[in-house]
Amino acid sequence: FRRVLFRSKAKVLYQWVIFHSQYAQNNARENYTPNGFLFNGRAVCQAYVGVYNLLCKMVGINITGVTGKTNRSMNDSSHIWSFAMLDGKQVYIDVTWGDPVFTNGAMLRMQGINIEDVCDFTYFDISKQELMQTHYWTPYYEDLIIYNKLKN
Image 1 (cartoon, rainbow, N blue to C red):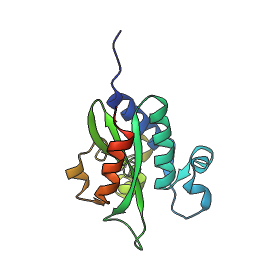
Image 2 (image 1 turned 45 degrees about the vertical axis):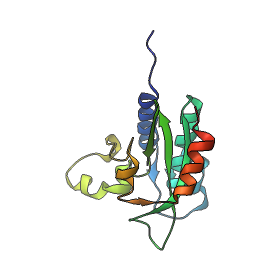
Image 3 (image 1 turned 135 degrees about the vertical axis):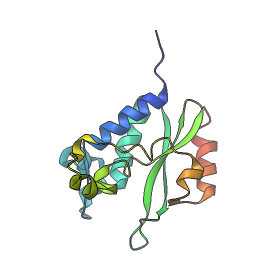
């Protein structure tokens, strides 16, 4: 019997979320909820992260959402991504930015690539130093998460 590592589980769930929704280009209320994600197949970061984190928690992964800003934030809007403990390692995961429709869908389409079959792993299992190149958040919040939720 071989134990499946949390990183492997998190990666499969990352792909599942990306392949089962597309980034919503409007601010409809349902796009912010897991219902919008699950029933309409459209979502914004809040729903991507809500569904992803729930699925991860269901398989035993310690994970939580982190809110902040990014270098792509429009009108000073906020963004949310995940912070997790995978096999003893603290990592960041931005499942929304893993969806090529959100990040570079137009470019992929121009190259003749079917974006429904693509998953971008650039923002999966990323270090704090790497994420800080594009994402900004309050360190206090991160310290609180590590202390209270990821002790195990």
